[in-house]
Length: 292
Ligand code: 5RP
Image (cartoon, rainbow, N blue to C red):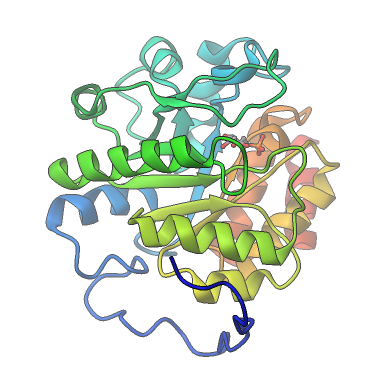
């Protein structure tokens, strides 16, 4: 164990210098991965923009039926044309996503808590790698609770999933969890994203915060940003624009799409920012035109 006393604070992020090991394949940190991994990552990150609109509807894994997600069978086919990846549980995907919809699949594989618990940080790996293979998952999502009571078990879960993914060339998405007592500071997100990346994931999901560009610079794999609680549409689009401008390679947005009064138009507006270089204001104008 390294001695923690006298540690210097990391500060030299060189945010203006692009990631260096970038010859050969367009996804950050994936140059040295094999064909299968790169193929899955290409199903997630659009080869033209390099970015991804992931639609998160895995809330039921601990929240049960969630406002806006009552009828996945009706919602998902409508959103499919406008997003790159569906992020959900195997139960939701198997039952409600027609297999002829050719979206990337981010399969939620950790589970173990519910809204009825105070501490959500104790999870297990709930899906066998064989089932992830059967579902043709493009990545497996594991909740990671750095600094929480369940840190050890969640790092154990993450390691097991990464090890299985490496055997079969399926990427792992490390989802940085924010417990209710955790400060959403850049200091915390720098720590958590970097630990998760060094464990060996191929992509990280985290939240926006101050100095987000430094978090991106210090993380050797692509970051996608969670939408978080429902915001008015202009603010949600501003969040997407801000993080893409600072180097995120996509968003993994749930409530800000499915709790919008116009989820399809909202997904389209988000995609304009993520893939087409729209500003948040241009995307909001697009949204207003689309709903009228
Ligand atoms: C939980 C998750 C969820 O998928 C994610 O938080 C849902 O997205 P949103 O916050 O945008 O509703 O990964 O950690």
